[in-house]
Length: 535
Image (cartoon, rainbow, N blue to C red; front, side, top):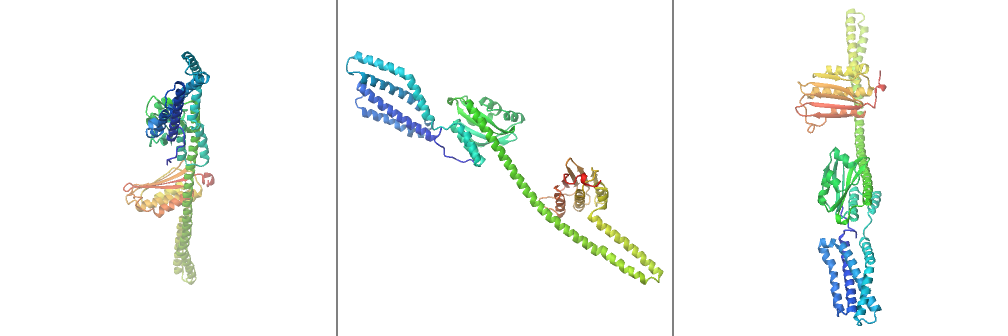
């Protein structure tokens, strides 16, 4: 946000121009009064001194007129310089005549030859004193006019001081542009900022409105490697920078690239009319120093923004991790309850029935045929119990996964799928049990989801690959698909996301109605590499 600031009494400010016109009017009135008095003393004309003094006071109206006429107001400095120089010389000549003719002459009304000789002496003295007097008056005028003008170095000092006070960057750059205009750039100053070859006009004094520059690779390299450059360089590489100032021969423009570690972060642009003279080497050095400081400040701002984004991302991940852990704990508790219920309602009841039938064998000891039938029944019951326990163990951790690894376990799962499923497993080595279990159960969940929702004619593809630092699983189908914005995420997706998230992985789901569904999971291999897994 650009903030409007009250301009101090500095170069090119309206209050300063009015003050200079006021000083000019005072000089004109004073010189007029002295000239009238001197002429009255020397030649007795004019006879009425006061009326001519009143004429000199008319100049005091100049400041009021200058306030309304902007071009006239801006000429205050040059008009004052010329007036002080000419008026001072006139006053000096008249003062010499008064001193010589009146102070040294015996009688002004005496011999004309004597008056002529004295006048020649006065003229010679005036000519002799004209040069030194003019130089001295010019220096005094320059000191008077520029006394309120701050040194250009103050821009550098003020920028560094404001940085330490944590001033917002937009306000800091606006103050910098205002200071540059006051000190070295009467036509205006701009600051552009951006990254990756795209620069925006962040601030300008006077306000030139928004602007954007896009640089290709060659232009970006040329601008980033350039030093403080002038109008010709800007017209070649960045002609749009000259548009706000007008493409004219009577202006001087300097462009200072803002870089940090070789990266272009912005530009400082200043301009002034040719009548103010060219930019000096000290100006270029100052702009280069300012560009370095602004580059460091912008780099720090980028670092701070990146840090804030990282902190926000960490907060989000921490929240998701806490929620995931809560769901995992809840799922683990539910799994234990399910196992307990299955054992109680299944294997435990069968074992109780076996115990009862074993007791019955005592009663059938005298009946060989009944005993043989009872033992056959007991054998069948034992087989069913063993199968049920095996099924229960398979749901906890598949034996094939434990013994043979991901490849064979996933191919077996694809073969048992309710819809045709192609398995493309491009891994052979083993991983840690945690990684293998996470990938296996996520793939199993995704294949089961495809079998339930993709449609009876759908086909699925199960693919697992390994990159340099990730294990990637993909399950896609050519089924009916769904609109993710209109359908709430199912518990199956939540379970898969939790399994991968617990190991630092991610899960993405892409689906479009009529174009199937694709599930992709990525698991970092920095956790549980093959060195931690079984051989």
